Image (cartoon, rainbow, N blue to C red; front, side, top):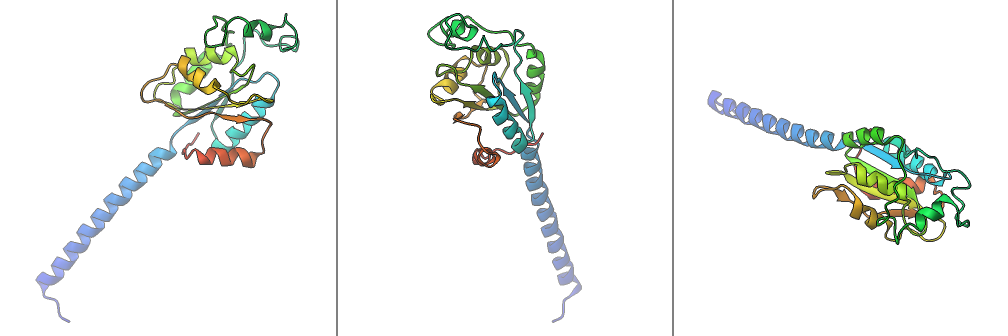
Length: 212
């Protein structure tokens, strides 16, 4: 088969256009993928006995995000955490109102400014806490009431002995600084320290792409 010079030029031109279009599509696809992969994650957690911290560390291992512990200015002692004593700190916090959301008790967070800076740079924010009387501790309310979560994807998770998640995630959301662009996902409860495999499976089920 013979091609005229004109016909040959037409074929070359068509191939050039195809290559350009393919390049544009590939660049756009790569750009979108890269943008998704650049999402930054932070895991902010409060842990009084170490249980919640253990789970938070497993979340960090899977997400490669920044791990930050909520540090109480006045740290909780063993006596403070004695829920069987009417004079203990946690009991007094619990009895200060019908729920932590309505209470005026807000334990001061020592590293609040550091948390604000980390959250500001993040796209995805995990908030971890133990369950006390079916709710998140008062200090976690101090967190969501003072750290802006506007435009963030927020994933609460907790640890408990028996009561489970309850409405703790929804109650925190009700007091949080959020916006219409905030994606507040359903919370997750762990009754015990789960395996890394179980935590990783849960995180993958959220279908979030993150990178430190």
